[in-house]
Image (cartoon, rainbow, N blue to C red; front, side, top):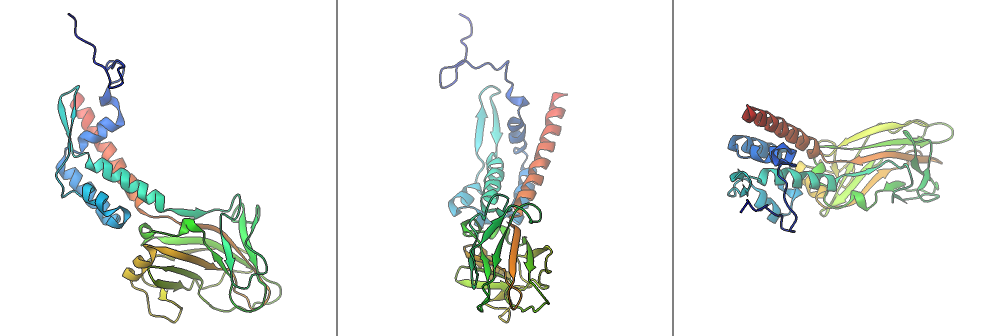
Length: 294
């Protein structure tokens, strides 16, 4: 009797000669994790740039490097492939980082942004005049109060991964006659029972776009109002962990004016660090594979 052809679980034959698993990127990446010193270094990097807040506690507990390693067996080579947890960690953290990202480019509509304050009309979308492309604007009703752009649900919830990065956006104000500016809270974020406010001084120019990058860490944030106590990193992280409100000021002029907004971005940083770690892992894997082929 000849050697019986191996079959997959679904009954189909397995053709190893047509598909060599050692040629695939995943096969190259996983054996690398058998090197304890590299696993430790990469996981340490991930732990320093990504807090356990990104994952459910049970998931983080499973992925934590202090737990025993998991061993898988490659049946063709009859060899052990250890510590696949590192690959799972990088994939899970990258997915969490992506899930917490929020951006509005306003290329096709208002994207759920609304107006609060003394606005003469709801948030309106324009396909042109942005920085570049489309943008949204709010005309002032001039009855007192301050008008704000109110962020949609994509900017709410757990945004703790954005801590230490910047909230970025572009603003323009348009008004007739001379300047008669007033100061107020330019950015307001609420969450976790706290409210923090930021002054983006100077105000945007009349008829021209200005780009802002508001650091999501201690320094310029105040509790409740611009005259409140300086917010600590822990308080800012508490707010970002459960954002219920994010507003950007649309009114800066006493009198008739229109506030315009474009390119709002609240994007966590860990993604770039994970890409760097993944790239390093891939390069080292390829180097090791080539060494083994010699």
